[in-house]
Image (cartoon, rainbow, N blue to C red; front, side, top):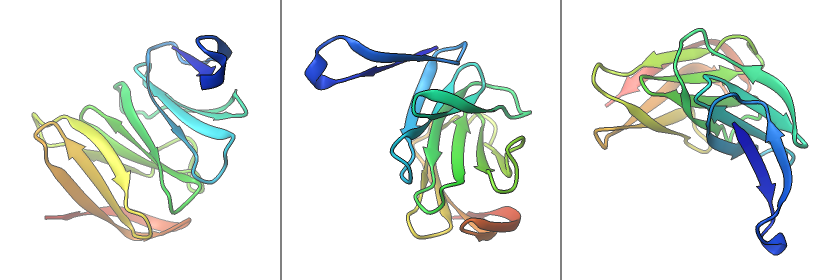
Length: 155
């Protein structure tokens, strides 16, 4: 559950250690909009937002399961996505900090592995354990100006 900050020039010593998660940390993602903000996700089923090394917000879905991957949108500073084993969640912090805006479940027997926001579009790409990538178009979703949001499956 620890995150260590280190420097290549400092050798093997840690510059700082951050603790908030109670399970192993699976992924860290720096904000493309602010150099001192990052997200971390963990087996403890949470996503933590950090600013200057201090935890500022915790996100936990009502849908149980460890969070394996987190990704900021390159288009919107308040939008990020998370990958759990059997679902993907999109969080729009303008709409809610308590609940994900979108939850999309995987097909039975398919494990989700990665997520990528397409730059300059309303598309999200989701990879799975079968080696497939599915492209989703966010319908009724304007970057940073969301109303009713739905996922439209594209083949």
